[in-house]
Image 1 (cartoon, rainbow, N blue to C red):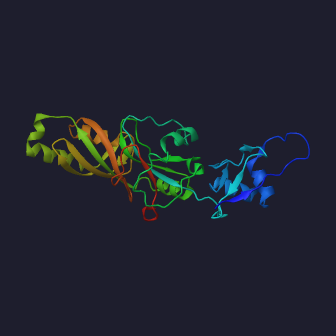
Image 2 (image 1 turned 90 degrees about the vertical axis):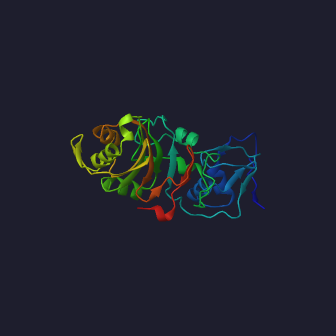
Length: 265
């Protein structure tokens, strides 16, 4: 049963609503910063509804409840894994806007197989940095992080992180010839200069008549399309399956989950 916190009543008149953090700090009692941590941690209810914003205004007649399981601990920086749908436009901003994060990463589209055990909080959707973002037409694995060490690792070692891709190519009668298909793999396996950079060769294999699996270190925009064009192929769809240790691994399109400990770089 939740612990009820009785509101402090004023002597005269109708009091102005006050910030939830101030109300909670006075009634526990505790420091204002501790109250803010309780609220941001999702441990506080107002009239039966969880409120995670310390700045929320509450009136004295409203019932404020603190979960007896509440733990006073700092919020951890989170990393989210998302299966980006094709043609989903990412904003041209350094950080994902909170409103868009709240729209994309809801409780209803959280992956049912998420094994992280993390309680989702609104604070987890604040200041998310997209690392190794995908182009508009591409789909597949994307990573958003609040964790500076994850962001730094993925940025500093970007050229050494292996990306695994599934590439769909346009139909071509020449691809029915086995020698032509072998030539495509040899072309994809050659190193090249692209956009002024030396690009590592790709490990490639045919998955079906018009589908290739490629593993390449680094992710320069347009790199896979350029490799396919050099091999005489027209890229029609591109999906990222893996980024370093992080795998898409059955994550449905449009769904998300939290990063697991063993997936850390």
